[in-house]
Image 1 (cartoon, rainbow, N blue to C red):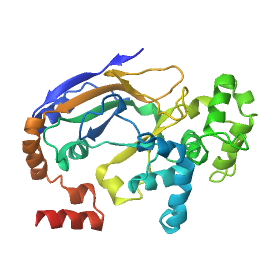
Image 2: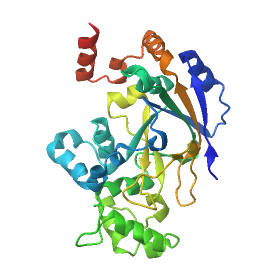
Image 3: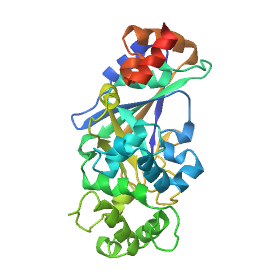
Image 4: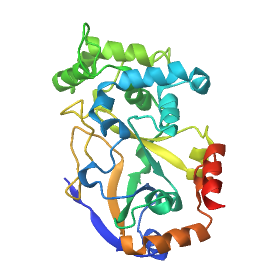
Amino acid sequence: MNKKIKIKNITSLVEIISFISNLKVDKNTQLAFRGEIKDYQNRALTPSLYRKKHHIRNEELIYREMQRFNDNEFSNDRTAFDKLSRMQHYSAPTRLLDISEDILSAIYFAIGEKENLKEDSYIYVLELNKKKIKYYDSDSVSVVSNISKIPLKKQKSLKSKESLLSDISKYGDFKNKFNKQESSKFLIHEIREEKPHFEPIINPKDLTSIQCVRPKLTSHRIKSQKGFFLLFGLNPDDSKKPIPLIKNNMLLNNCNIQHPINKIHILKLKSSNIEEMKKDLEKLGIIKPFIYPEIDKVAEYLKGKI
């Protein structure tokens, strides 16, 4: 059943902290936050891979070309997920969506570098099922991450996202039959590049799921932002489109799509108060060098500030 998302108007940082503090959540719930500079409506909570059509059409090329030109950067990354995480770090389009355990980081992303102060900003507060949060080495995470290596359309072979979806629709309730199909064998081949002993048994439902993943803290940025990710699988209706989470202020629930989100709240940061909130955020020490601690980002901040 779809759930209505409540929107709360916000005029100060105090109201944000108060709202979070007063949320009644149990021990099995993990709060996560994402800040947006404007209202993306039904396209909110969408990975960058799906924001332009030519990105999803060339996902496997982006994945390989990033490594071809920057092999040293990926030398310590063992898995497809590790590599996607690094690509996301450098703003390449991926099927990852950044979220944070830190509300102040989310506020910074919503307003910290905002230039158009005539538009409201938004913070998405996610109530996640803790039991469904995975770590970077999970088999389910490997299954979804390795979709990135598979072409979108059928070419000379059945190695494609379209073939995977076709076989999911036919054999989604029959795991053994699904794993005998050529499309799944191609994916298993990719997974075994990082896990040589991976058993050739993919759960078809994993392929159309959204996984919440705690990554390795291999970068100062992930550490400082207390970041983790939503990892998007295939939309069961269309391999070219993202799995929809929000539509007309409703959290969508589809029996064919597994995801860890129990509830979403939206905080609308009113444009008329954003300048004051930015000042208060800086008073709290939430500034660019702490969010982006890399030397080039610190240099950018100092050039503009001093």
